[in-house]
Length: 121
Image (cartoon, rainbow, N blue to C red):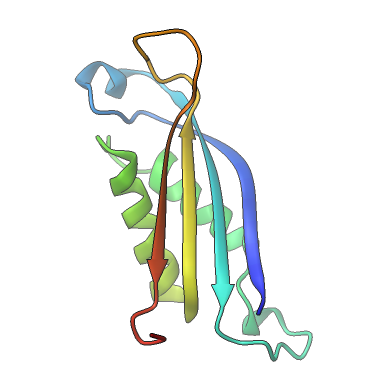
């Protein structure tokens, strides 16, 4: 089994559950891991997942979309874009929001999601 990943990509966007968050840029740190269906690549990029595409998906959803309230929704959008382009077995995404306003000092807000190809199960 092969996995292709993009780890700790920081992209800025105007997202959050609170309206005030839609008026300023804040960082989101994205990690995406895709489990491939295929293990026959023939040294051909078109037979695997291009990690540059994973970066573009994260960038498009966070930097180029109108405000999204939930990181869960961001992840769903990324699942949709990746699964429509590639035949993959599994997608795991983690988004961290290091500047999230929390009631106490310390900690990092994050949401993780996993998508499984229903046709594989």
